[in-house]
Length: 619
Ligand code: FAD
Image 1 (tube, rainbow, N blue to C red):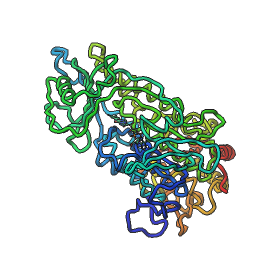
Image 2: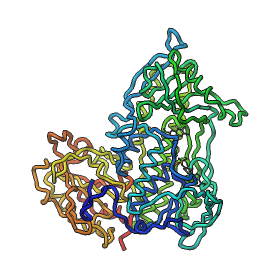
Image 3: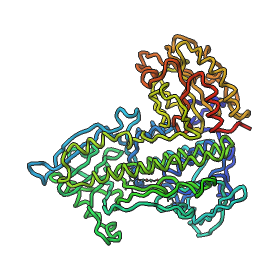
Image 4: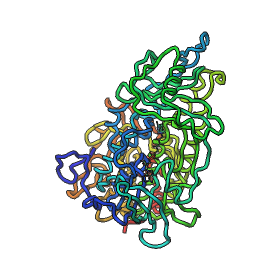
């Protein structure tokens, strides 16, 4: 990470200097604000952490709970989320405390003694080869803690206003703060009205914000119930520390070891819910769930020593009929729905928290851009256009996975089928399948053949390069922070002459979108990747665009020039691993890490047209 560019710091460098609203943030919830986030779950907390990088935007996050979450529901963190944590600066720390899923084993009835289970297959977990980031298990509460820290340590110094409940809202057609929101102070029941320019409904499955804007959850319950418990046990089941899907005569278990070496999450199939049950199944006693788990695991046994948390739920699959309040195409949205507020499904594919966080990531930079004048208001309409199809894909995937998991052994013709589905669909649950359609922020005229390993509209898949200034190996994508900036990767032609001309030509273009009182790279973080070895040319010979002088001291940034030729420390050549043309290419990446454009080095006009469609010139 880079620091000291604002002068020497001796304290924790992750605590960024306060700016804007962060300098004297009011302790109490003010009457007016730019962005009001309702709910501090994974979607809301990520959004708060992102908004903290836009300190001139006043953002508040209200939460009806009195304090931090202690027992979370979600625990499965897909590699895409860990990649996102990297951008927010806490991936190494959360990886260190999490359980890392390397394998998934499958169990079924023993053909000789069907009342007993035997292991039918072992597969590597889906994260392998798909990403350099692991598939983790860690409590949702810890994820929220890390995002809370990122929000507080960002320049905007955002902290949740706990104990404040959202009651309802009205969108007015006039005024600087057109969304009127009724809130209640949980401690004393007092109510008041506050006003915001935009409201993000991150308030979970029973979203009051959704109701207030008249959106409907569409879908149905699947009439199938599961018990779930986080348990500390002694057992003779040999795979207790490996993720397993168990498909027994007596029912099904999805078993997931948890962080810390002892705890496990066990999903126990409670079977079909009788018609007219009217949610009675949700009162199934914990003892029944434990007894059922023992029946399924036969001949192995579970001696449960402590239950940290348990619940019974029915599987439902629902998507909201719209993700914002713009009921007709001419209206700009003012209120947005994210996470469980707009999509709910079963828990067993471990997707809800992950997809909810990506909703927040998608929305955050767009709000930041519009409210700082970097982009036109119509950018906000791309939130619903991009995220609703993702939610629908999630529901479709989860419906298939959860019904496969709930099958009886006699319905399974091939014991390897579940394992094959798990591995075959790996890109989706690991979070990398999302591909946004061409729009004002995904350039449909891109030349995909110039960088085949960076699919347009998909997230930028990192690869290793060597930093020229010090010869250190770096993952190019890991350098990108969730700081609201665009990344532009300029891959050089063989002798770098076209790169030099490109750098000269684009400097005024980038300057046009960059506020004059900020750093020259405040909006575009532009990096060069040469085909040569790092020791074949001097850093100081790179065009000035890649050696900007930033911060109050105007210090040269030494970390924007990279080399691709393999060395003893870095065996891969990014031009090969990502299929980049030896003629060079420019890859533009959005602040949420999705590839926005792929252009030749000589297409500066095209780049200019794309940026003019997506952004506003700096005033
Ligand atoms: P939530 O986490 O529900 O957060 C909403 C927040 O809004 C809450 O803090 C709530 O208190 C607050 N709120 C609600 N109403 C108001 C109001 N009126 N005023 C103020 N605040 C309000 N997902 C995964 O990705 N991986 C998993 O392994 C996984 N396992 C799961 C296991 C179980 C048993 C369950 C039930 C879910 C699981 N999920 C999992 C799903 C995951 O928990 C949710 O998808 C995720 O929490 C949704 O995040 P969110 O931010 O949208 O909403």
